[in-house]
Structure formats: structure tokens, C-alpha cells
Image (cartoon, rainbow, N blue to C red; front, side):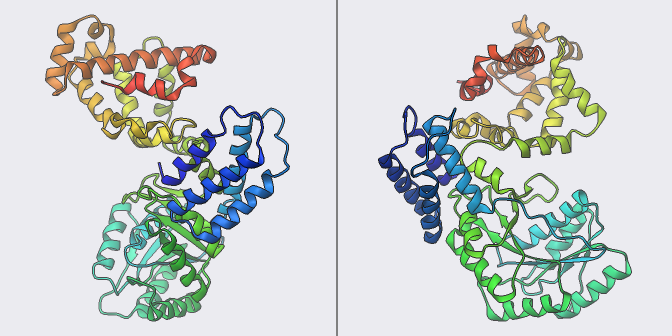
Length: 454
């Protein structure tokens, strides 16, 4: 969780138990927002604008019917955050039979890695034939890196040795047209800082290739500096959008606000991790980002990712097995494989409202608990996997499984508790008895029941 998210959570907690939002509450809230934004390295103009919008929405406003003051504060902050972040998603403009996308960014921003991620996205989600052009001739190893990425994701990469940048791009575009490619993504030259020669080169390329999109790859770890860099690019040749990188490592969380406000460009994607074929390259939705920053989760993104991964009849049958009375370790083992396709347990829980703000102090989730459970199940006999009661009622079997899997007896007991609680909850969900699930009202307690080994 970022500094910004924790600060918003703290601000909302101060409103608990209040019957009315008073002027002094508003002033204190705006002061806390100002301090948290400064700590998160947010551009000062953004802070001023944000507080102005907060005051505009809150002063003299009656609490909405059915909402407590804390809920009203959440709604106001959520609305303002969404507005500052852009209100709505602006999709890629790739509507022609043949489109060119220009990627620009500083060295170290993750530009070349992002080229691969974007290419994979366009191929998979938009069903287009994609060509990557390796035109970063300045950074040693950039061409080799892009070729390697292309091989991993099965996307063609056009490159040439001992040619200048414009020749490579000209030849690459001719190759694309001749071979029926629908989208061409050009990885342009980067520098360690904004450099006039680089800006002039990109401007020349843009004027010649007339791209459908010119996207700035911005390193979220740079904080306010990222907005200065993005502004410099945009002023030089008018970009069409921004891709935020390293979002998983941005502990401050303020760069996205600064870049959107300073450039007024739509943020089109946000990216994390070095992988090119996973869910860590996401379409940017301002309302969903606002929800995450406020610790309210992002169920829509989670649902989309699950639907994208659970696409076969076999996978759907696995999910249905959760509600069956004879659910067993064999089913759980298969479902773990399905869960791995969706993402880590910690990542999934972060999307769920009320849970993301609770799990940062739970070290168990930092371990690969799924892999641990899998090794335990693999040490069971076929009979034990199909009949969980055999292990539950026999300590000697549990000790054998623990020793055979390289785990402790308490780890086996944790797995037994896990599957029993999962069966209980699934059964109640199947019977629509959610009102009886008091643990679901307290996600932290529910997680502790499942995960805490201490």
C-alpha cells in the first residue's frame, strides 16, 4: 500500500463516529491531504487544485441521505480523485487498417519492456497482427533486449545493424506494409535525461511516420520529476497519452496524480513487474485507480482478470466444485493451478474492498503459500487426496505427509483448516446464508483464520 493510500485511510478514520461534517473537520482534512500529498511527492499545483475541489464539493453541502459523515467524506474524496485522474478511460486509437504507435521515454523508465507489454496487449486483446521496430540505437543492448522479448511473446521484431535510426524505421515500416502487419510499435531512442538531440530526433520521426498514438513511458518512481519529464516530451512534439511503469514499486503513489495534472494527457495504461504476458499491464481507469487509493479495492478489474483466465469449460467446472459436499484436496490442487493463472493471493486480495488495507502486516501473504500447500498435497496418497477425513482423523498420516513434503506438522494442520473453512464458507454461499458469515464482515479476521500460523 502506498503512502497516499495509507494517508487517505487515516483521513477517513478520523471521521468515524461523527454525526456532522463541520468546518473545522473540513479544514483538518484539507491540512492532512496537503501533508500526505507532499509526503507522496505530489506536484504542489495538484495539491492546491485538489483541496479547492474538495472545499467546493464539501462546504455548505448537506450529508446525502443514507450516508454517514465518513461515507460522505469517502464519496467526496473519491469523486475529486477521479476528476483529477481524468474522469474516464481514453482507449488506444487504433482504428485504421494500419496504425503506428511511437513509444518515447528516458533510459531506465522501462520503455523497451513496455514496448513488449503493449505489443502483447494489442495482439491478445485487440486481435491485431503486431510488429515491433527496434529503433533505440543509443542504448547498448536495447535492440537485443527487444528481440529477446519478441521471442518470448511470439511477436516479430524488425531490427538492423549498422543503420541510422531513420533508415531502420523506414525499412521497418516497408516490411510491415509488405507483410500485412496491422499495428507497428516503434521503440525510440532514449537518454538518461531530457536531451534536445533526442527530442529533435523523435519530433522528426513523428512528423515522418504520422503515428496514431505517441505514448510517453513514465517511471512512477521519479515522483514529481516524472511529470517534468512528461511535460518536456509533450511540449516538444505533442504526445497523445502516458503509460505509467513500476507501479508496484511506487511506495509514495503520487506520481500518477502529478503527471495527469501537469500534462493533461490521458493515462492509458499502468504497468508493474518485468513479465510481458501477465495481468500487470492494465488499462488505466481513473475511477478504479481512485478506488484503490482509497483502500476500496477494485472488483471490476479482478472480475475481468478472472473471466480472462477462467475461459475453459474445465476451469468453470473447477470453480463449480467449490460448492460440492465432497470437495477434496484433489480439487484444491487443481484450483491452485487455476489461481496461479490469475495471480498471487496477495494481489487478488488487494482487489477486494476492505481487505487491501488490512493485509500489509500479514507476513504469511509474502510467502508462496500456494506452493507450500501444493507440496503438502503432492505428498498425500491418491486416497488421501480424495478423502480429506482420512488425514483429519489420523495424526500418523499427518506426520508422514509433513515429513515427506519438507514441512512442519502445523503446516499440514493449516492446510486442513484451510480446506475445512473453505468448504464451510462455500456451502453457506451456495445456500445464500451470507448473513451468518460474521467473518466476512471482518476481512482481517477472516484472513487470519485462513493464514495465521502463529
